[in-house]
Image (cartoon, rainbow, N blue to C red; front, side):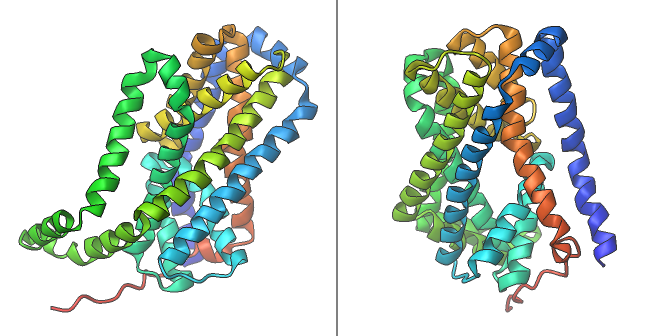
Length: 329
């Protein structure tokens, strides 16, 4: 079974990997091949491991958030197993629409017996809390840069509306009851109820505030890492550059996630490069070089860590059937 499932998992990643390569090539071409080559050659590569360290800081705090969500869901996995599943999920971000991340719910089901639908609620809570965290980090920058206000408001309103609706239990239960009356939806109602109960717990005010706080601090780390990369490209260190780096990366991360593209590919890169030019005033070549470097230090670094985890986790590539409780009636 492992041999038959491994190609299917990797096959889902191929479009994202191809898109990622094309995006990087497009960035180099847009920033002028000669200029980008010069910028990368003159980049102080000794600071790149520092940027990777800040990315690891982000991953560690986000892992604590993941583990916190698991505990709220009634899962008591050892830290080592929990971290293995967390890191193994990184490559799934480059699947179309991030749909592959649902595999994390399957892994949780196999490791702990957590119903698949409740596992999906954990994955959703991760994504939404990350979205709210990066929006919180970018709020001040949006206030001082009005052109980004419409996109900021639209993404924020969508995320907050979803969280609030989940917490309005009578309305959600009424909608689930309505689904039970529709023949085509009746078979899925049990899974929807499991998903809702999991989401209701994870989006309680205290849990949401804790997750957003952890997320904001973790993504702040990546923003500082981006600042380190910019200084490595020769930009003079300053508080203004630090604030700009945090704003650009946080808001671009939100736009990339909202695009539903694999790993935000294309949308995030275009936003980072564009905002570096508009907000910080960087030339196109340096903006493109900085974008290539930060994506290598974040998205593709995470994908590499996940793939390395897969090498020692063959059980995750040979998935068994999901064990779901059978609904009565």
